[in-house]
Amino acid sequence: MLAADDLDCWPKTTGGKGLHVMVPVAPSMAWDDAHQLTRGIAERLAGADPDRYITSAALSDRPGKLFIDYLRNGRGTTAIGAYSPRARPGFPVAEPVTWHDIDTGLRSNAFTMKDPLKKG
Image (cartoon, rainbow, N blue to C red):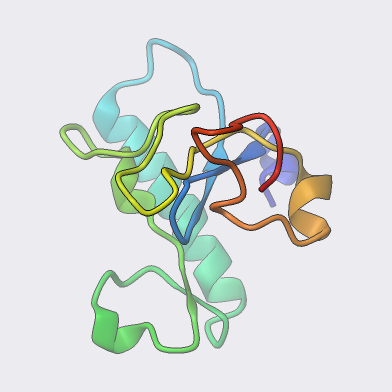
């Protein structure tokens, strides 16, 4: 879907349960424009398969579905940076990876502070 929109992308582990899809945008893009772009993408994805994906942050709406969190793209919101450790057991690290890594089952908390560049 992103390729059809001429958007390059790559995955990044979060060190938690999720996965971030990184998409470079023009440095001049305003926060509100980036938020609207990602909201539109998320809603298109969720609309294409509503039994699998959801954009609602409400936990009660999400059982059995993948949450597409476009809200991380708003001014003042937080997201884990690449190569940043999480304050969780084992100190997992967020790290850019490849789609092949994801396809072969790489877990979102596969890297740790002990050895951030090797899958744990």
